[in-house]
Amino acid sequence: MDVRHTASKKPIGYPTRGKTASNRLRRVDNFILLYEPSLLTRTDGLFQRSMFIDLGYGFDARTTLESAERFRRVNPALPILGVEIDKERVDAALPHADAITHFRVGGFNLPLQPDESVRLIRAFNVLRQYEEKDFAPAYERLAQYVLPGGLMIEGTSNPFGSIWAANLARKVESGWKMEALVFSTSFRMGFDITDFQAVLPKNYIHHVVQGDLIFDFFEAWKRSAAETSAAKVFGLKQWFAASAESLAAKGYKIEIHKKWLSKGWLIWNK
Image (cartoon, rainbow, N blue to C red):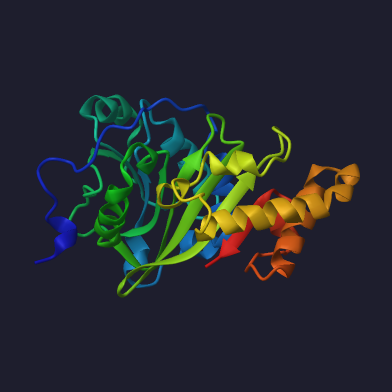
């Protein structure tokens, strides 16, 4: 039996809070476009018709439509599916649907047709409302739909998307392989490492306590920021980059290429 296409009649999950600002997830999309644009343009095998899924898009279709505009600059034929558990939200989005842009009722049991598959899932501001015990089952279910080599970016942002943190998970034959934890800032709110703690993904947010790995990471990053504070005279971006380089020197697997740090993305490879 193909588990991808035997979803429960009832969508699995709860409605999201739903409110979102225009371009709230622009930095998430821009990150993907820089991190792995080839994922959006692949046409080999099942990737020929595989979809981008915007899971839990909210009260209206704006995040899905904004992503469609960005991603289709590199792949005009990219199929996109906005998924919401609330039928009224889906009904409101349907006027925006076309041959390659779809909106369907669903939850973590994605509402795919038998010939559909997934290359990329974006699930933002979704799992934050769940208990931590629900994190692994949600991930396991979503993994069923994604092609090997595909990605999921799952996390939380502040209301305007200027600060976010997200898991980057790669689909392998056995399920998900956690590839990185990504932190993003536009610097509009300055540079304060504690701001990232409030938007940690569900599998980390309750573990910033002494003795846990994520606690040690933040303590090391705070020390690195203090040690490189002289760089702030050159600007917040330079200070951010210097703190990341110092963190890498402490043994953390941090991407220190300028293309990431200059844009406010710290990637902690797992």
